[in-house]
Length: 153
Image (cartoon, rainbow, N blue to C red; front, top):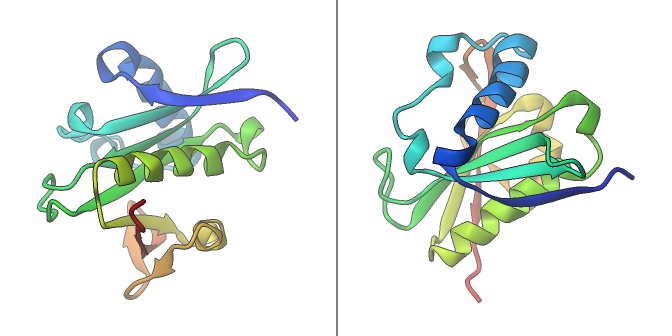
């Protein structure tokens, strides 16, 4: 099993690496239009980076904290989860998701939502997320809103 670590990312320091990974996975691989990928709120979000043993970025995830994007202060959104193809099915996505959930709990959030690509529904369900509402199209890809009520320690 390849060795990787997950740590909080610093937007000022890691923006370039994060942007390259997003281009690789979302824009090139999945065909997401460039105009839909970038958001002004990116610098204000909590980012998480999975790095290989040499320090190369192999996966990312973002937590939009409560109070942003019209969210109640008690809710957050996990998104922009992306893992390079060679690193998929090796625990990277789970580690990134768990880091995001830990940060959401540390922020005192009661609920986290996400837009899951339908091919990843089982992955999120294994982590306790439940579907909410109908399947919808986002950037030409079918998605399902999913939610997780967080238990606070």
